[in-house]
Length: 207
Ligand SMILES: O=C(O)C(=O)C[C@H](O)[C@H](O)COP(=O)(O)O
Image 1 (cartoon, rainbow, N blue to C red):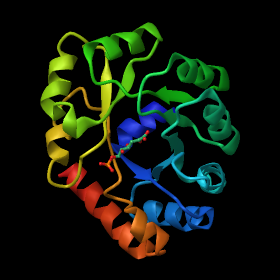
Image 2: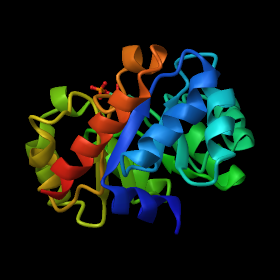
Image 3: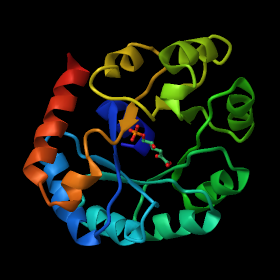
C-alpha cells in the first residue's frame, strides 16, 4: 500500500519528538500494540534520523519524518527509511527533493494560495497546519469547496476533545497529533501508557 493510502486507512498520525533514538524501537512496538502502526518522527531533535532507521528496520510500521524544512533533511529522512516527509510549510525545494528521492511530500498549507501552490507542484494532499489557529475544521470545509480534488491532514491543536470535528470532514484523509505520544512519557520510557493512549485514539477515531 502506498504511504498516502496507508495514512488514510490509519486515519491518525502520531507526531513524535524523540530525545533518545534508543526509545524508537520500543515506541514503535507500543504504537503497533495500540493498533496504530504509524509514526511521524520530527526533525526537532538530533535523534530523528537514527530513530527513523530503528523504526523502519522493524518492517511493521509506516515511518515518516516531520518538521522537514530543507532538502538535506529530506535526504536524511529518505536515507533512514522514511516513506513520507511532513513539513510545517510549503517549500518547492523540499517537495522536489522528495520527488527525486521517491518519498511522499506532505507540506503544510492553510490558505487558498498555499493549496493552489501545492496543486501547481503536483500534490493533491496537504498538511493543514497549524489547524487549531487557522480556522479548524470549518476552514478545511471552506477550502474543500473550490479545491474538491485536495485532501487534508490537519495537525496542530487536535486531541480527543475535537478529533471528531476534523474526521467528520470528507476532505480530511487523516489527523496528526502529539497527544497520542507525549514527549515526557516517551522520554520516561512509559510505553504501556503510550499503547493505552494509542488504543484510545484508535477507538475514538472509529466511533
Ligand atoms: O513540525 C512539523 O512538521 C509538525 O509536524 C508540526 C506538528 O504536527 C504539530 O506541532 C503537532 O501539534 P500538536 O499535536 O498540537 O502537538
